[in-house]
Amino acid sequence: MLKTVNWPFNESESEGLTDEKHILSLPLNDLEKSLSMLQSVKKDLAGIVIEPVLGGGGAIPATKEYLKGLDEFSKKNNSLFLLDEIVTGFRFRYGCLYETMNLKPDIVTLGKIVGGGFPIGVICGSEEIMQHANTSTHTKANRTYIGGGTFSANPLSMIAGYSNLMTMKKKGKSLYSKINGFGNDTRKMLSRIFNNDVIVTGKGSLFMTHFPKQNITEITNAADASKCDIAKLHNYHFQMIAKDDIFFLPGKLGAISDTHTDSDIKSMKKATELFVSNLKK
Image (cartoon, rainbow, N blue to C red):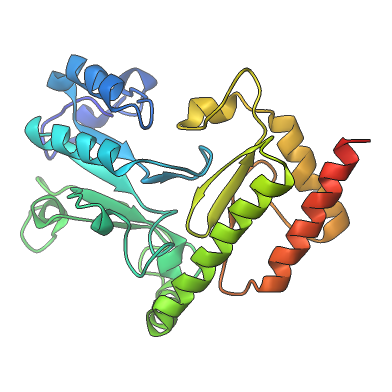
């Protein structure tokens, strides 16, 4: 959440906008508290930025009601509603997640999925917002610059991205049925093997295992996730890397891809059972 400035703003107005004093962290999935916090700063509210499913924050889905509430507040307050779909874009369906939730974001960001894994970033949004970056209708004095850099419109990224998206579009529902199914099976499998001593979060083909402590009984936001036993999660991931040839970015979520097969899920099941047996020794 950023301090309100004139749109478009000049260089002097933009100084210090990334300072933490201009950012307020909201408690995911607690709509009442979030709206109360937003109400207290509504006169200086430039926008609300949120992931539909927290990636690095613990693979935690935001509820439809929570996202809808934030969207409605931003519209009534004449603030921007921005969705970070770098993790969720094209992950659960061919397209963005917001389209399934009746949300109307002003800006949506996408990442390497549209570059076929190569470096790329995409900023898209409503015509009202994006026209400020239209070089054909705005002069240099009143134009807003959005991004720009080494990999902007990079030919290799564009070709790889086009090929990737066309492959995904061609496979269609069969692709998402496969990876979402594997994700659902994996979450159920992990809960069963750990005998409900863990909390497994995620959605579709994403999953993450949390080892709760400090009386944590559910994971609804990043604060809950941070109170879990991160050291044990690292040990779990490092053991699979070292002994089972299963790579995890230690402490992060797992993501099923089209290259995974049923044998990969079985391998993870066996590795998890071994980890649990070692814990009991």
